[in-house]
Structure formats: C-alpha cells, structure tokens
Length: 174
Image (cartoon, rainbow, N blue to C red; front, side, top):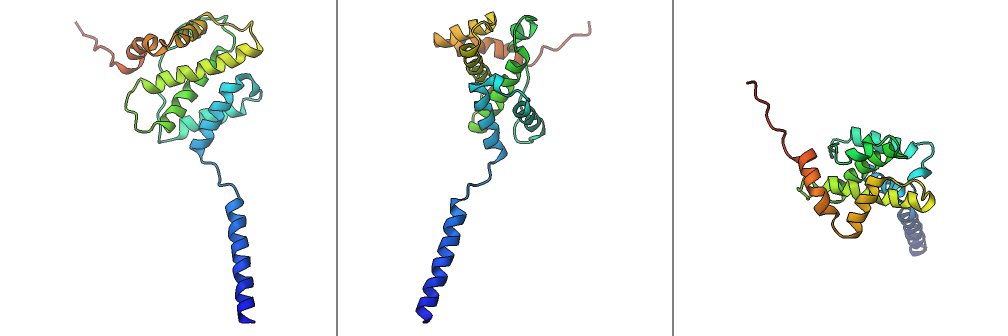
C-alpha cells in the first residue's frame, strides 16, 4: 500500500511540474522591445492606435540599461514636409537602435546602434512600400539603393560620425 501511495504522490508531483513547465515564461521587457520593434518593421502602419510605439517609447525613456542617442542622421527625412509617415520612421530608427543594443550588449562601436536603427527604419519603409507604393520618400530610396549595393555602412558612417559620435568643436570666446 505504501508503494502505491508513494507512486501516486510522485505521479501527482510530476504532473504538477510538467504543467508548470508547459506554462510560457513571462516575457521580459527587453524581449518585448525586440518583438515589437520587429513587428513594426513588418507592418509599420498596423499600429493604428499607436499602442506599440507608445510602449516602446516609454520603455526607451524609462530603462536605465540602454541609452538611445537621438542624433540627426536622417535630417533630410525630417526636413521633408511632404514625406509621408516621417515621424514614425524616425521613431522606428530609435526603436531599432534600442533593439540593437539589447541584442549586442558587448558592441562598443558608438555608430553601430545608429546604423542598426537606420536599417530597422529601412525594413519598415520597404514593408510600407509593398502596400503603399505611392508613399515613396526620395531620401529613404537613396538609403535603400545604398543598402542594396552593400554600401549603406560606408554611406552612413561619415554622417553618423559627424552627427552622433564626434564631440562638437569648442567655441572660442574671441
């Protein structure tokens, strides 16, 4: 009788452990950040209530673990009043920057997150063009051409260096 009781208790314990193992672990904020960033890359305009972008932006502002330096690497986009969705492309660049930092915590190249942000923005732009080919933006088309030619990093590095990573020259009081 004792053996049957012990076997029954072990079976129940194993079932409980198996049920717990089957439950998905809670998603970390870092994992959610990457997941939402990638979702927007595939369907930038699908976030019609802006809940994804709001969560991502809030997370970027609140996290002490990562710092997204916002610098003017896409100024032609921002300055083009006719560019459709320009604001959300700039946000996507920020989200891609943050996602890169999470995925590459040991990368000390200060330009790498900026380039990753531009690449994220271009993935989102390409996805938008498949649904809305009339939504072309000349500057982003130029960046896509550079990317297709395998020269995006070469093209963006001097811009990133100038706008993001080099210390501004000290002004003289002469």
